[in-house]
Length: 212
Image (cartoon, rainbow, N blue to C red; front, side, top):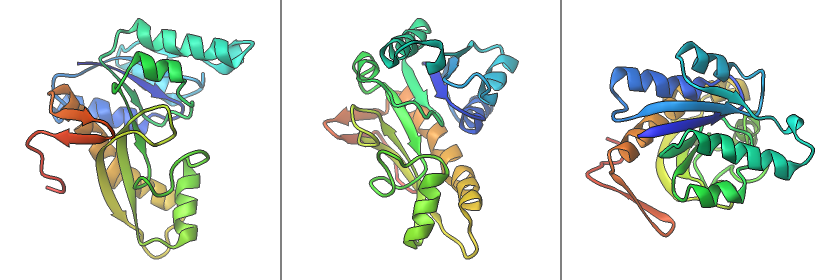
């Protein structure tokens, strides 16, 4: 399976994917491109170091949002991926891209959807909201992308306990280490091996035990 990874920042989730491919945790998968809306994203350097196509498509390069979205989609289609992976991507995915890759775009969100998700919930804001609400458990979710924001079918989730003294930054790091970097590679491997099936807004996974 060929995947394109869309990123906006440092690319820690991208690195988790690359490491999982190297270790055999992800099988039958090749990263064929990394695309960022941010020219300074370190994720692009991670890709270049591995000989992977790395490309910046920034809104600043275009006169209108529509032109940017058209170029964003074209860059993804150019690599002919089987799956598009949003790994810390802060671009709102255009409906045209969702239509072009139906049930073939996945996203990692740093909370247990439907909590702390939707418009405005990204990056540290998610963890700030979780701490402000006083929840005891947070986590991460891998889901398919549809026309809404964080509303697509859920593939995998993993819980992370909030600890005394957590700051948004500490919690963000622990959610990445204990949840994001584990379930995103796992979801990619399941999809690559044909074990994920979507029916409406529900996902079924062949021979999978949740929490095992």
